[in-house]
Image (cartoon, rainbow, N blue to C red; front, side, top):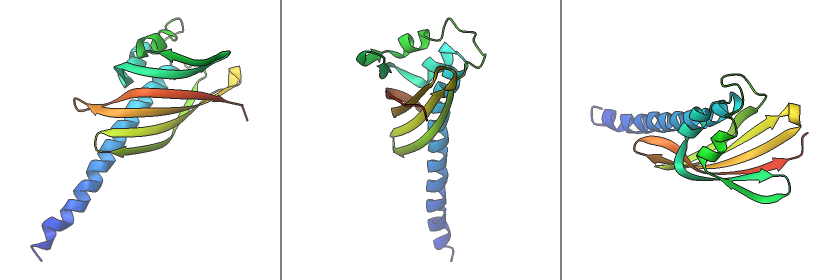
Length: 141
């Protein structure tokens, strides 16, 4: 029985490791969501790899590409720390080793806006960072 005990710890440690990775990925995504919901440019930028590309939706423009710094600047003229009406929630997360993908829903009821964001993440220097984001606008329900 002693020989089986270490083998039983392997699956448990793998589950704990996977849970930890999921929590770290979720933390990065929540940094983006909370930062954009509470107009915190530093929090937004902290979620992204500095050279990431954000492919966004904009009226009368097929594709709108911004850097994390340019995106965060969109929130600079708002009151930092005050809820701005953006409601975000993580829908899915999938990861393998040092890469991940995720999907989030963003709603801004006061402006009748509804978006779905798709993220690519990579673990860089021990931290999960968003390396790319694409967004599409949906009709409000």
